[in-house]
Length: 425
Ligand code: PMP
Image 1 (tube, rainbow, N blue to C red):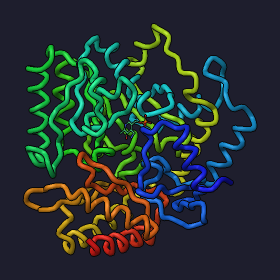
Image 2: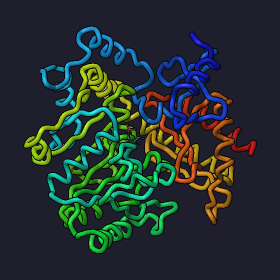
Image 3: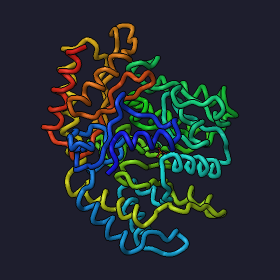
């Protein structure tokens, strides 16, 4: 194949420069097997980020490869204007994983599309326009969801979106009310009563903020907020693009960790293990608002992607991956606590299951983000053979969200490397 330099040069010449490289010296990946990635020289890396929380069951899982290959040979594309078994049965199997009232699925191709469609359905269903989301949330990069996403890094001054309001982020570490979910929910109530018409279409939240740096929403926040939203005529939308499919360990869906039942659930990323696949699950009543019109999506529920999605659901259960997330998450949080005791630069460790964050600060009292240090450790980790994620509003949070097939040895290998990299600061 072409050399790394040739690929780099070609990318530079023909692809939009808005596409950025994660590392100072770009890493090229040519192969993936389970939790490992290989570059063009054959060097192996431990994957702690899963292609941005997307490779849920591991790279090129044999069962998934077979399902995709078989479907690929049979028929690649039909659109939903013809009947095909894959998309219908995938809908059935996915609905079986959701609370019983969410038994109507619309398949699309990306998280942004799923959230766009969720806004549309919520507005049609309620007849209301205003949408409330959280500061520090990430819901996509389409023109619609860009207005929803509230994260300075991703904000364009020309794409704000009408009728979208951002509530205080219920961030237990940096938020105004600490871990008091009810107090943040009261802010939503105030927003509804003073900053909107008093009628709202929808409320969006990730139960653990992904791009925002694995922020676990304050206790009971969703329970109280859902009530305020419903009191004002709105529906509640759970964005499970990152936190779903067993990743939190204790529950299959992130919203379950807050004990709430949403009216709409959006999914993407891990649902297809990297194939373009996303979904919106609603009640039949909410879905009916679309039925009176025509809503169309050319690739949504493509048979190859659907075959991948069905395999993902099976593999997670067959291989006990949710339980694995629970065991490894607890182990990792224990090791993180040891690291926190040893390295003053660690300000906060958080998360659930294999959706974890570690935030670096210059000073534990002022919580001033240690941005340069985060970058240095991040690069050092790569040199030691571990590809971790990075994020948070200030770019000072490590995001640890590996494929769910990680082992205890992988977890320890990463923690040992973190210890070394942090000691070098
Ligand atoms: N919601 C969440 C929680 C996400 O993390 C993302 C992607 N980072 C999206 C939505 C948008 O997904 P996509 O990039 O597939 O449009």
